[in-house]
Length: 189
Image (tube, rainbow, N blue to C red):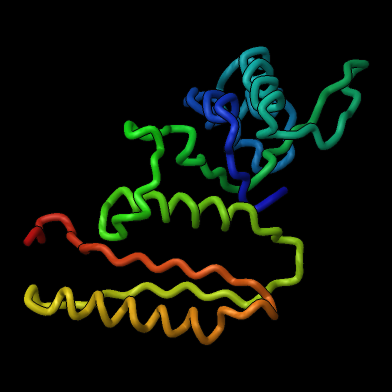
């Protein structure tokens, strides 16, 4: 079982749109037969089998074994992953997905960046030897009259890092920095 399965096909997303299938998928975190899932959910075995087949077709579950019970072959299934990420590309954007690289200060550019990071992280091979990575999150408070100064300092610092470590040798790392207003509920300014 993988940690994360990144869903990029519309058929996979559509398969998960049924709440009953999500419940069946949760039950299949551990290997179980359709009969066992049906008993746990209080549903008929036929109904669970139908949902398992749709999940199987979409690659969201797999058959891990088969056993013979009173002369009948019974499949044992398990979820393909512990978590499922839905690609933002499946939802689409009203602007047709046009990148806004010219305007690094726009919300659209920030959404594009987050989509890119999500896609890159989902594609990392969890079985490969780990290269060091870091995730940092924090809050900085900047008075309105110093916002531009802060953004200029941030840009200069990042450009310095890119200049110092931007050579062609060594392991490749991707750096994405997002800076956005932090408005908690009821704390709008």
